[in-house]
Length: 177
Ligand SMILES: Nc1ncnc2c1ncn2[C@@H]1O[C@H](COP(=O)(O)OP(=O)(O)OP(=O)(O)O)[C@@H](O)[C@H]1O
Ligand SMILES: [Mg+2]
Ligand SMILES: [Zn+2]
Image 1: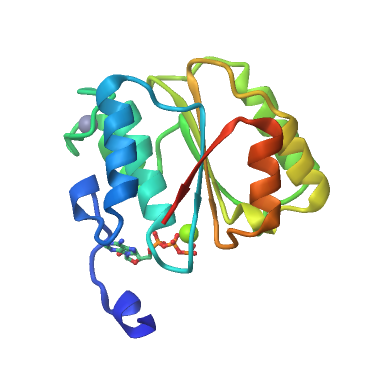
Image 2 (image 1 turned 45 degrees about the horizontal axis):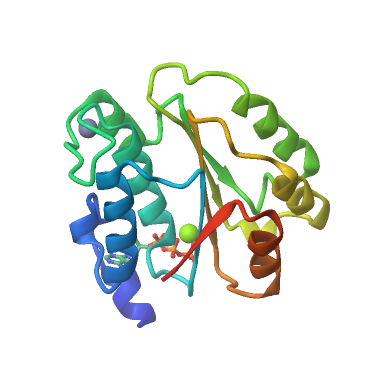
């Protein structure tokens, strides 16, 4: 398993490339097709099942010039820049290093502002289980209601912390891979 993961050469670029997660793909593509994406998603699952990959594909799907769409074009400036990690409106936060309350506060302030170019400001908070308890609580206190904002988190532990937060705030749509 471990060998297989590290031996894979290419990071999947579109939903169809993500293997072994048909229910996640279906949930997300349905939401995109019907225009009913949630404000906040939490992808949980074991190491290397494609949580971060899926978060990036979702960011592209939301902001693709042809979108929001389940069939991302991969050639428009939004798709290309999100793929490169240089899109102004798609922030990727590494929960392991940006794990303080101040980091979350900064995000809360940004939510209030409109995107610079893309349709949505998307925050990908990777490894959300690495946030300090105070930062985690601050994150859960955020109301993600602004239409032009989407939050996507990944977490390796499908444990109590995630479950509690998502049921308490009612804000995170949980997707388990
Ligand atoms: N379901 C999948 N289909 C195809 N490739 C995958 C899949 N899952 C992972 N990969 C490959 O493995 C690499 C690591 O995946 P990714 O970083 O998205 O996993 P993760 O779930 O975020 O892991 P971690 O828990 O360590 O953060 C990707 O670059 C991708 O090439
Ligand atoms: Mg990851
Ligand atoms: Zn595109």
